[in-house]
Figure 1 (cartoon, rainbow, N blue to C red):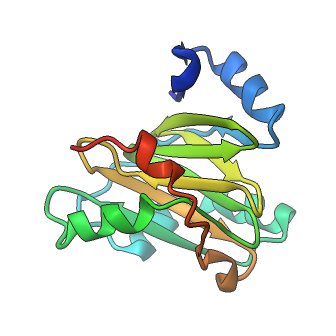
Figure 2 (figure 1 turned 30 degrees about the horizontal axis):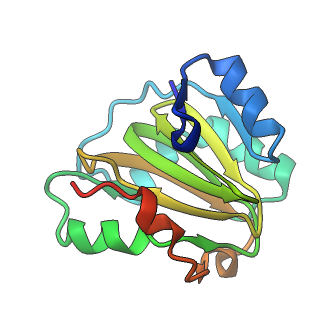
Length: 174
């Protein structure tokens, strides 16, 4: 279950409905799905997508989404520090970025207006980062996450880095 942190206000929220309401007011969509499939640590992208196809396919068809991929980071992932650094810089995408977390956890940081907040997502969390929303992603202290990313077009995956530097104020030094 997700956890919402607003560090500048020293606030942490654990209640799903409160988190959902907070995010909705900022244009961020959050929901819960079942994430019960047992997958190998090194499960391939196709294995992960196939395991969740029955939920994923109708969701993608309803939303007009055309493509999905899998981020799968675990203790045995080569170059995990380089992967972590790539995600830690604030950026935007030209379309919504949707992630369904099937294992582990990851932290989405948002910078909306003057507000900065983080949502720790765990297995079962489904989150949509609206197009052109400044955000970054932290693999967390365990660097273990398996999540399905959904887009309309692969060009929407391109990160447009803001260069604001605000991410450096909030990123932990694991």
